[in-house]
Length: 291
Image (cartoon, rainbow, N blue to C red; front, side, top):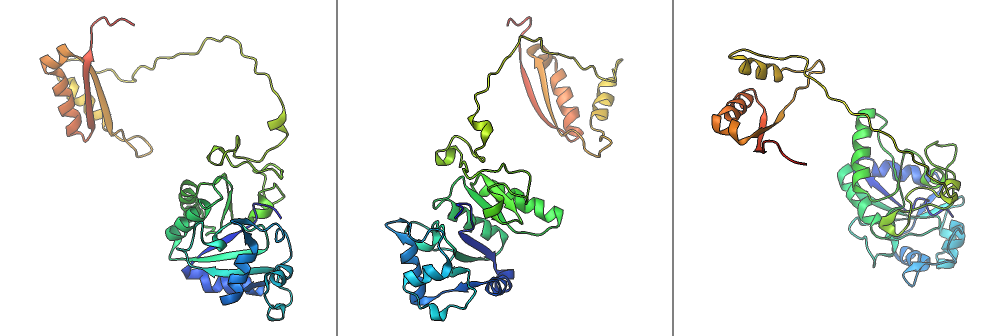
């Protein structure tokens, strides 16, 4: 049983009933009431995964948990329970890792609520590990949701629209994951790496460095303004948009105290603010400063 296999599923309410029906049609059997309690108490023993349940078939798990297998349809490959999204934590057995074909299903109000539920599930024993996101294939929607999910769910791997169990070990589903059965969980969970452990992690490499002179450069402005009254014209040009439609919005004025006393700093700052710039001023530059 691969540790990256789906342990819980968080489904938004908009598609919850439809997806639940699809799961049932694919061999997922939902257990309720006393059978749910029996299942939870069997797969978790002493606040840890019951080793006797790890990797065992769903029917065998149900039988050993004390559930009447006559009530379970033939062809059942996964046992599932419906859980309240608030029931996540140490004392809620079905919110933990299971390492067997048993799935906890949580309903969320919407996408953002679902991200919060996923984050709480991960923090309940899966920090740094693996999460999957099934979402719209529309690039604009997908990218926005992926960005939010990656930032808020503390895992080392996020797989988009692909099964986590097979993708995490590096298969034909993708080319971004190195083949490995040893999955790092990063420093958040006490590991030295957050990616899949491979041969390159075990090779001692020698870094050879030679002295080099760094390239330096100085860019000159493409326009130089001079003569009386040119200041305002020059600053108006600074506010013009680039070919992309963007423009500069913030300016830092660096000067000495003399220019400040003469009013030059104030004059420049006022012109820039009139053109819509956010202006900060630094006038603590000393003449002939040392290193």
